[in-house]
Image (tube, rainbow, N blue to C red; front, side, top):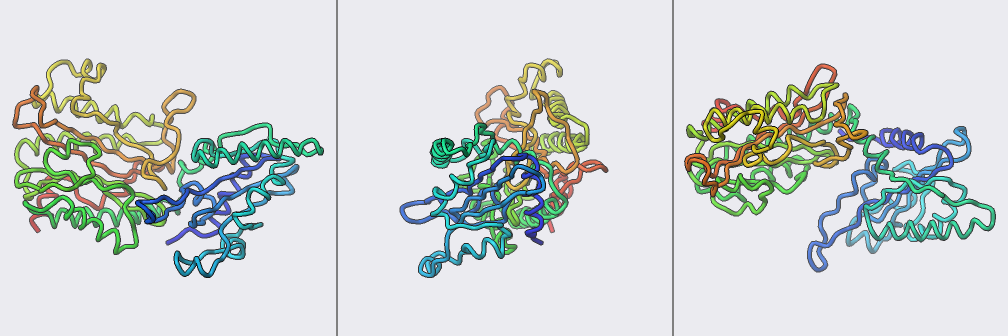
Amino acid sequence: MKLTQSDFQKRRDQLAAEIGLRSIAIIATREEMFRNRDADYKYRADSSFFYLTGFAEPEAVAVIETFDTEEEGYTYSLFCRERNREMEIWTGYRAGIDGAVDDYDADEAYAIDLLDEEIIAKLQGKERLFYRIGQQASFDAKITKWIAEASGESRRGTAAPTQLIQLDTILDEMRLHKEPKEIELMQIASDISAQAHTQAMKSVRPGMMEYALEAELNYIFGKNGCVPSYNSIVGGGENACILHYVENNKQLNDGDLVLIDAACEYEFYASDITRTFPVNGKFNPEQKALYNIVLDAQIAAIDAVRIGNSYKEPHYVAVRILVQGLLNLGIMQGDLDEIIETEAYRQFYMHGTGHWLGMDVHDVGAYKVDGEWRTYQEGMVVTIEPGLYIAPDDETVDPKWRGIGIRIEDDIVVTQDGPRNLTAKVVKTIEDIEALMAS
């Protein structure tokens, strides 16, 4: 399944309506990046640029112009690389100017080299310029230069924009509310990621290296035409207590847990899954006790992802269950409400319970509106990922608990019928995990 050009056009229609008359929106894709010397990272287009255009090549800029009346509609221009036989032999085919019109529905297309020349005329007669301020310093400088040049031309009677407005304010809100097709793409990404986690549970064994287990994930991603959504975390034993552990270069030991936070993106849409399971296939009593606390917190937090609830409600629900569990085990002492109020629990749970998910794994969208936590609306997608991490050197805790790190994460869609779990196809109860690993 892929999005069609009509899907991208609907988004441009919405953006044109949002920016209003006598306005212009300019959005550039991300620059190519060097990995080392003359070797590039594999290119991925900027998410917001692709969201509007479906165009995945580097060195491209999209321009949307509105005019004096609604009847005049808007013009969508795409500046991109020209066809070049010699360069295409080395680096791959390009859409070119004709392809930008024929295949990507641009009303007008220009060589990217003509951007400085053509953009001045497009700025003239506009009152407002919408631009993604602060995304690329080099492009910020170009915008400043163009505004100055367009203002200089105003002596001839053509006004230049007098308002510079953050385009992300509009685009981020558009992207936060997912269309049904977007959720379908995220479901595909989630299903592939679930396959990868299932394969990891089946493949792990004591003595295996973390990077070898990561390779099992990458194989499933790659054979399904996907790439990782983010740097995979495969943390065995005490490495699971490092929230963003990505070295993945240690041995997995008998008796330890391994925490895997890894997922893929499909057609530019991300998934995000974390599972924690025993290297030898069996949880010991301490691991089991902590794991069930995290699982109970996660299940309750998922249930709180409902239309009208505060974005923060799942976090509040999870924290209460986590703290009570730690009190029951004697890992913490004191009053439940006081521990929560003072955030003393952050010794063992130091991150939030989720984030927006979409084209980016930490997707765009404001978490607060007018200073208040926003409420869930249909079509939003959020991760729910509580955890507990007991540092290996935490001398305030009995040694039997030290070095255990656990996180469980799923991707949840807000629907009229309650929370929909996109990543439910990978098991997470102790019984199901142990049964799968024994099969």
